[in-house]
Length: 264
Image (cartoon, rainbow, N blue to C red):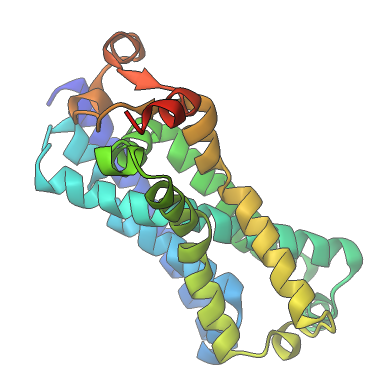
């Protein structure tokens, strides 16, 4: 076993352990508070989506290390493409909203304080509301090249490069439409005023969540506008190349140049 495969195995085991721990934590929550509590709190929805993402991307390090550059890479890269940016927006929205709840005082959290120990409340908040953000950030740092490769693929397609409408449709899909699906589904099923014991207006809450999601998912715009948009989809070997090899072989153009050239 070479070093690359050994590291891939280690990363896979660590991620699998993280998924197993997350499932165990969720099970403990359900066992203590019941399925209704799990269903009606969006924190658990966000946490479950994150566990699903990590479970589905478990093969990624081995697929890259073993150079399975055909359909295995395409499948796992599609999962990253569809889920990562929307998930980052959802997880960030949950983290920010809970932070403001804590800062301003929350009737819901005050209720937990009457029945739970302070240590349990603190640990639960860290696991479900703050560690989730760090976990997702750590994931993308480790797999930044695979993530870049996954998002480069659709945006570097000739049809997308030549059509502003298609380009912005893709941007809005990843930044707003996909993360809105679980949020709208939750809002359609549950009354968040009753669940979270808040009197904030629905319109204001919706605007706040949309603003947070858009700001959080704007990392995609950083990639597209401030970094590089490929002239063509990158080859799979690029994921495994060193930074120096990548810089030497990369054919790129800035968005500004692309915008002026797309009608050529």
